[in-house]
Image 1 (cartoon, rainbow, N blue to C red):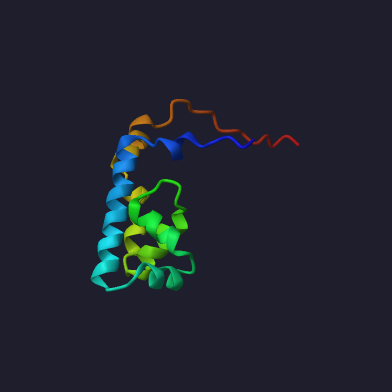
Image 2: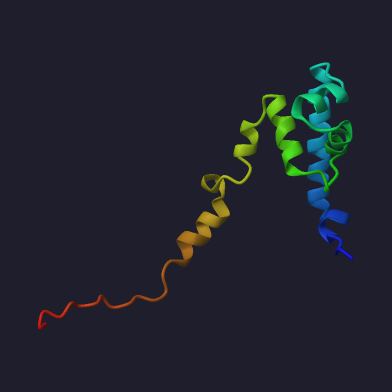
Length: 113
């Protein structure tokens, strides 16, 4: 029997909240464009159920569905910024603060050969 993914069944509250907000935003984008769920599903090459689940913010919905919806609505550039290392100030501060803790001596090439 396959193991169930606990993250999908019970994601952290903040994750669940963000997915629901993303789903709501995608639904608003669809409605403003006057697309039906069926039209959107056909245009991105999936079924209506996948679109409905994305709009509900279901954790088990594949990332590709969310990305395709962003693409369809002309918002895919927002996905490029999600984990941009240049914008990750906390990681940059850690990287700069740690530095090297051990320095090795340079190897000297012996000319006696």
